[in-house]
Amino acid sequence: LLFAVRDEPGALYKALEAFFLKRINLTKIESRPSRKRAWDYVFFVDLEGHREEERVREGIEELKKRAQMVKVLGSYPKALLKE
Image (cartoon, rainbow, N blue to C red; front, side, top):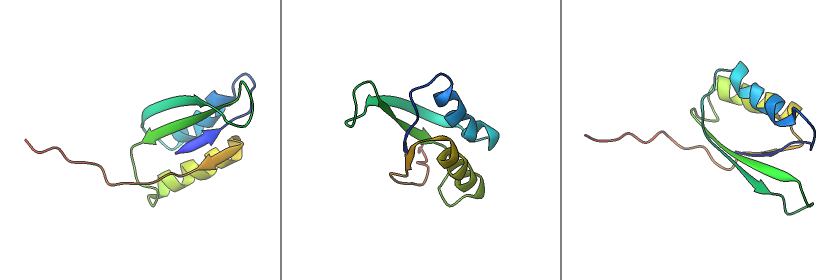
């Protein structure tokens, strides 16, 4: 998942709260400089769940209300480790 927020205090917190409200666990958060403007950043997020699950769908929809841009890069089944 890729998203961008406004450059203002609390913007990232408010965006991530969308996942907290739906009890979606984030497994990775990474920031990268935006290619559009200096000092703007985009955030890559990995989360537990599939985009077709209701809570994940609702979490992404809530994120869209809070972020400037949201793009789902893919949704994959959870890998199972063999012992």
